[in-house]
Image (cartoon, rainbow, N blue to C red; front, top):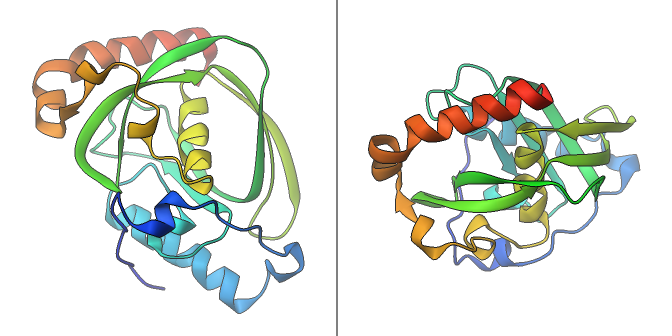
Length: 191
């Protein structure tokens, strides 16, 4: 439908909790257009995911997709997934370090601790209730996008301030080692 402007850190909408969507409205033209706009905007920006509030829609939904993404060559593939009114629970205390960036925090990266094993429940674009367990590296994408819905951006979760760096510095000095870290996670956890 349309490629929308991506709101940047500091915008009040990004710092607010998004509101639930009436599940009876999921099939409406309005909500379906929002979903298409999220997909178009995410793909245009080479993102791995984008939440509705990042493009000015204050509701609890996001999309994710990882195919041949030049920004994230080390990330395991993920089919296009539309997530509405999600709930996430942690299945264990096991965590891993995820080096993250964000379309709303341009040209910055930082290390965030994420849970390795999560359970997710949500509605898809057809209004069907879905549940699944996600483990390994892919769990960080779910948690990153879910955080957006509660007004949390990755810099709010960075514990190691020295891990903040520009995208270019990450590519030049850290990406090769980080790709090995991700490969080990994927090898162990399958995603």
